[in-house]
Image 1 (cartoon, rainbow over the protein chains, first blue to last red):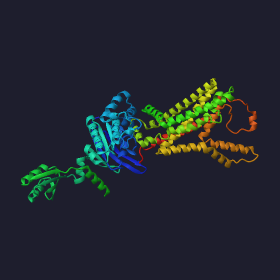
Image 2: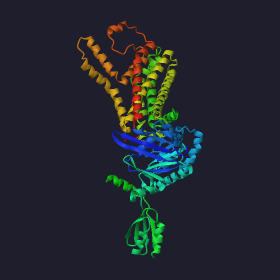
Image 3: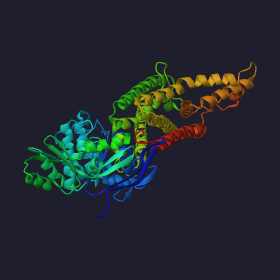
Length: 314
Length: 310
């Protein structure tokens, strides 16, 4: 299998009654990766996911999961892919165990091995105590955790989570996110996480793709995206000194790689082409100043995100 | 087909767990048994010893209660509707359809599994009630049914199963076309009421206009009657009722209008089973055909439906 990507989409397009929900989307997710799929509501995230699973036929283009064509071999794709839909539902009148057993049977897992597996999974997601309670008594967070157990029962190679934290309180959301990270690292599972909640995606995803009106407008590691989006490939360093003298500013400006220095009282915002924090601190000390603090601007997804959507609106 | 047996088993279990099916089952049993009990009382006094006495417990009525066949004819459509009206749209709104379809099964497994499960429940319920009624008959008369009577009961049972299956297929169709459960339930009830109560009235009105009865004209009366019958046969309710009478009352020789001069020449003896079956064959085939049409439309629509509305 080696270099084969887990998800590979080429020119994926879906048109509903003249409305293009997904427009020539190309996507690649590698094995063991947690990929964040971002975009505002209605950007085409769920439609893309349904096409990846073979639940909706693309108007054109191909989606391959571990090499299987999702449209031609949906059964093979669904056997190795666990999908947690956005509006997840369980049979309310059945217990947690019964629901999981039904899913196991639909996956062709015999009852005997399934029994142990169900108990194990319920304890992983923290639902052992309510294993024999009807799902109608569950809170939304509990149902979501049961959903993850349902996804894992088929021992998938890839899990696709559509807004897994929607409608949960922060504590519940964090519990779900930690669970996802653990699964990915322990079992080498690839994860596609769709969400419109930026900080959550930023917390756990190695790479993100930003979807807007059916197009993938940006893709890459969060850091790299931030640099590209916000400062045309440049970094910003914020330095606070005891006293900002002209000599000090000149010294900083002369460092190779620094392109601009802005002064705001005792704080300097230095724009540079690469990470020159070491040289900056040396220059400040040499010119007799004292460094109070130095900070490399992180690129919050929020800023990246806003930048993309501002550009689009403008 | 992977997953079909799992889905089938789950659906059958769901039906027997569902309160509305249990209530309906109780109603069918209660009304059927009381009708048979009362019928048996009156038959014992009046008709003991005549031919086809066993079939009479299904068709005879004392006046206090309608006969067994009338109760079944009334409840069978309701049973079919109750089994199917929320089959797909409930799972759609609760999100369980997405759960099931994201497992490694084909999409048509869902609709085929649901249809077969409904059919299995129909067979179980109808066979059980007819067997119990036959048992009661044995107990009352202490005379076993003749082979022909037994075969006629089997034919009646098959006809009723197909008929109930038609109503279930119609309900399934509505559950796919209407996203709201109340809408699909009301649509089913509306069709049933239309056929059950209004069809004969409409057939009469249309026949009055297209083929008015002229005085002193046998031809015009015949034409009127035939047209009215043809129109009312659009309704599966009419088809079922005609077929039931023919199967359970061997003396019924024809379903159309009969002139007095023809009656005089008829041999007043019951028809053999094979002849009765020939009369109802078109009825049976039509009901099966309607069922298949409903199922085929449901199937195509379900396969093409997007999982979520765009």
